[in-house]
Image (cartoon, rainbow, N blue to C red):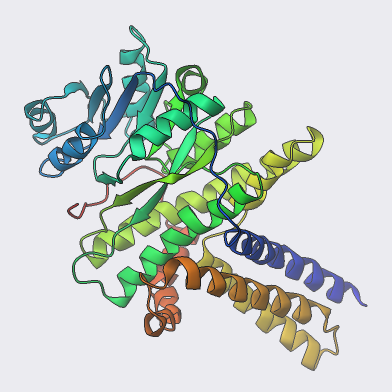
Length: 394
């Protein structure tokens, strides 16, 4: 093999690893459920609900949480840099509200830090975080709190996105992409005995663990950064398979594109910054959980991964056919891709068939094409600051 062959093989392996890891997660998700322990005693809990301009939406979320609280629980809404009636609406719903006004420091991390500082005068054993656009499934809060108590670790529920009342193929594909990321892949890790990343809502933390986190920052993916930070400090999150939450879909294509831009630009930034660090710490500290999180975080947004795979495969085919190069890079790429597609298809058959019918699944290339401008912006106009996305209705 020539130097060119070795370079292409190394690049092919780099792209193949996320596909193979994705396949392992998807196949592991098909294994029988392993429910973590839950505490018999349910301590009091404070539910933090950060909110930025959620007028007209927040009452529904508060009512859902109020239906699941236990005696002694406390719901605290943090109205963060609001310019509407969010605070007044939350107070009218009968919950405690604090307001933060600091336009120079925007983002959910600052809101959570502000809320924790307020709770510090009378700290609860457990702190839960629920977004103002979430519908908690039946019993979700209780099982999240009990698992956090029993394991002394953060617990993360399964957070899915609705398809709306009139779901088109793009909404269905987007909802399945979230299901793959927030349910199927974490279930696979859970069934292999590994931790998961945090999703920003439907989370419960022991108080001392939450206070160990660095929250006061404006990261556009503060949830992922929080999970990584806690894992490196010895508090990796654990999936709570019995707790389900549903978020409202973005109301239109513009809002959906803005939401996806923030998610995926933040994902790529976090991947480049934290995945190598997790992998390295997992190796030198002999902690498989950190190494697994490094691999999990190292899987790029799947549409971007497919684009990278397509471009590299084309280069390898040209090298093989016209330069007489080795076929090994082509075989590596094709094998990893086929393995991942087969595994995801099997997981779709168990988890996603109702959400994403087969005729809609075959339109995935159009969904990838819709997302291409998002990835082009990574090069010349990368998203760096938190921007609120318009909400749909619960």
